[in-house]
Amino acid sequence: MAKLETTGGAGAARAPVRPGPGHPGLMLGLATVGFAVNFWAWALLSPLGPKFKDVLHLSPLQQALVVAVPVVVGSLGRIPVGALTDRFGGRAMFPLVSLATIVPVLYLGLSGHSSLAGLLVGGFFLGIGGTAFAVGVPFVNAWFPPQRRGLAIGIFGMGMGGTAISALTTVKLVAADGMAAPFVLTAVVLAVYAGLAALLLRDAPGRPIPSQPLSRRLASTIRLRVTWQAAALYAVLFGGYVAFSSTCPRT
Image (cartoon, rainbow, N blue to C red; front, side):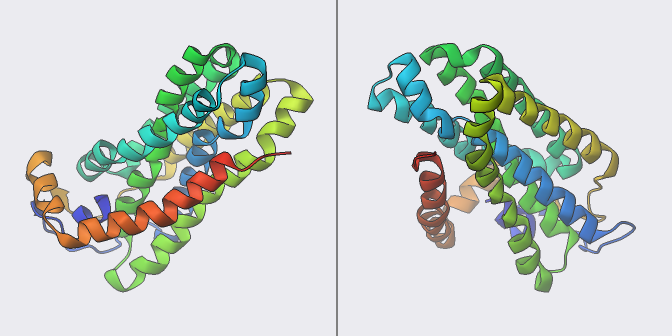
């Protein structure tokens, strides 16, 4: 949705989209890293699902809820976060989302993992990390002309590999250094990225800024047939990727 609004949504104040002073390649690289780091944080709970089930004696439904809550919140949260990005730009939103994600990451690592309620509350706010996708798409789009946006977004999409970082490292770090280790490490990486993003990120000159209220833009968007087609495709492909990455057994 954020991509549709940025590139041609109703109510956007039109302006030429031209890379001015700055480096589109650097902006793309920083956005991709931010996407990966936030997705790393977003997926921290799923590799530990079996461990939580054994330690807290969770039922299969409770274990599924622990894994699903950050995924659902991260997916739905992209609507308001995408709207905020259209308004304030990725330069403000990438550091903000990264810093906000640190709070539930540290909470889960230091105390929230000791109860089902703590996991659900922490997982709810951990969903903030999953909204980074909605920050990066309009940010990257604005830096590239239409004929290069497909390649740019494809490169940015590599940031989904952040879930693989979590899958490959979380269980091993817990086994080696305790439950807090992967959470503290991720929080440090998020803080470093937020600092770099605040210093280096720049919004593209001439990026379109919406002039209409969010409710009106949403109403215009949901009336488009392509919105529902793209949503269905996204649900099957990206939803399947997240489902497998969140539920496959780890060793």
